[in-house]
Image 1 (cartoon, rainbow, N blue to C red):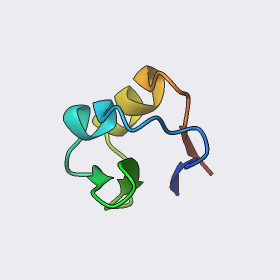
Image 2 (cartoon, one colour; image 1 turned 180 degrees about the horizontal axis):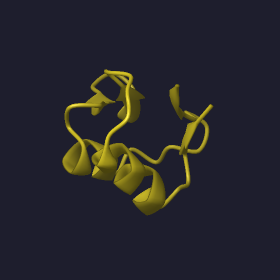
Image 3 (cartoon, one colour; image 1 turned 60 degrees about the vertical axis):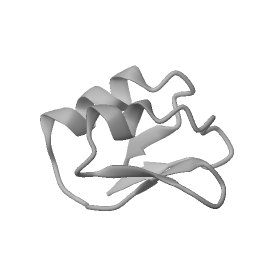
Amino acid sequence: MIKVDQSKCIGCGLCAILCPEYFQLNGDVFKAEVIKEGSSACVDEAIDNCPAQAISRD
């Protein structure tokens, strides 16, 4: 399961840019949210490049 820690997310949108199939910015709170579960190289890239270290897997 992919998780975005909303308390850490700064809403930069990098995850949505790197992996738009799995992440989007929530327009109401301007924080990232997971829109699809699964495994992909772009998810790993988003986890590794998140400046706030807000994305993880269970």
